[in-house]
Length: 289
Image 1 (cartoon, rainbow, N blue to C red):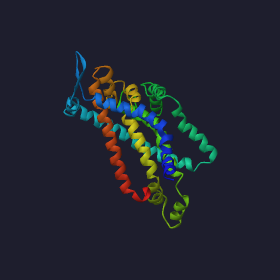
Image 2: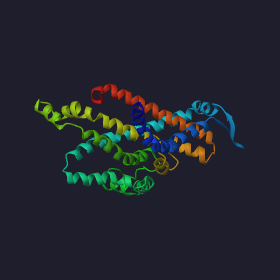
Image 3: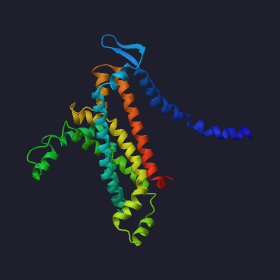
Image 4: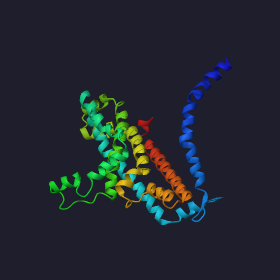
């Protein structure tokens, strides 16, 4: 009997071993190797040195440039996340009120870009945001501006394109929470005299918070670590952490310092995500219970 219980308890672990091995090989092992590399010394003449130390971390944390770099990256990721919430939540609510046929059509429109490489989409946006591209042509045609707006090679352009890239993730997350929402509760609030804004703010929005939180985590982490979009749209003029890591690895060839920056970026993202998660779960503990 005890042997049977042991075998039943061990079966899930045995079945999950292939996935755990793949996860370890593709994620855990590279992260460990990167962390180890970050403690190596570097010499411009002879390359990576065998000794270990905290010189790379000391150099980064004692340089104000890197503080500005991390703040810029965090502000960019936070801005993209907020815009995705502002656009994604109403868009999801509108989708929920559509007929099934229209829902399927608009889901294909919203999720279709995920089937296209992010590099291809970014190159398309580079054409649209150019000085004489479609966006500036529309703004000039509507007389909203008197001269072409510089959106390429700027943080504004990077945020616009990242928002387009990340918006489907927010919509998917909010949609999953919306499917668990009991519409009768909102109808009951309206029947008791609550207005549309009160119903949304006190009934619907708190129940959507798990989806908004999970979508925000996905959008923030992907935006903070994004490389292709800032590199192409920013054109080297918009420096964030991921582009500096690339420069350290492939231009300066200072792999240990690039690895140290990558480790600090990972720790910063984990700290922000866990902190915001704890705060929102405490504020909306009845929803998450």
